[in-house]
Image 1: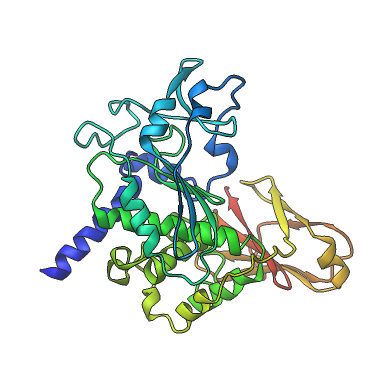
Image 2: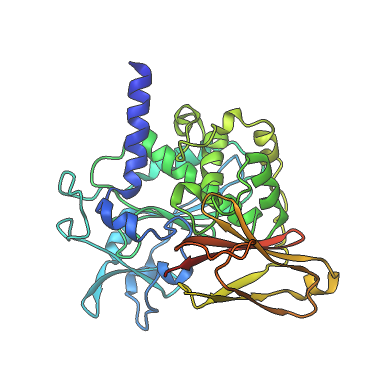
Length: 374
């Protein structure tokens, strides 16, 4: 019975991530809500802000674990609500604002719950943050306890060191609160100490056993994104007793981080000094979708070109099987253009499907999804 209740609670917690959105919509258009681009967080810049913004002081907490937390409470944010060009918005201190949904009967809110929005409670959030036990938590964190969900990002999310905790449609269970808050702090942590392109990500993926880019990438479904897996591992290993949930993570195909040899010690040693981002290879393709051929366009940083290292471009199918190696040589310039004619290494035309171009030069690598439509 205990295991049944624990499993049931976990399922409820995971379901809360899409509580507001109709499931069919969420599957078709699944943005990275936990680490959205800056342009997703705000819509416009205010030319005239409400006077009461500058009269408010957000409470600040200096926690023993090193976290320095500024909290914008739900009451404070609700007091800022006003209509701007006919749209309900909440202004932020820096002149930006977020567009919000104030009516629970809005068609975007699929589950109406008990008829009102329930913000995250400030005291509980701070209690959870106190429980985070990673040794390198000397970070500034800004937390917005939203009174209303954002129009363009309904669930909780993080950008940089800023956490947006979106309200639910029922009272938030303490363990659910711990689950979400600890997960989002995991994102703040990797944003601080593991920028995109740093070698720490490659080492983490190797220890975690998620090195297959065609399965685990930023464009994969939510449970297969490395940043989401990291945030889940952080929650379980360092999030405190209420956030552990028996060691289970969002992706049911992954072993619990508690049972991955060397993972806890590896993650515990991350931090102290933010890691500088390494050189990044960028790639696009045109056309995409394509038929019968497409051009892969690769931008190579000077550091890689000057190192005279080998660059490879390989095509894989969705099962991870190698379809064809398109390029393996030392690039001589910063731009590389490679044609793929939709054929495998034996010269046979491949079927209509999704494929992945894997581009790697030393520690720098990237993946590109290619869609062949005949």
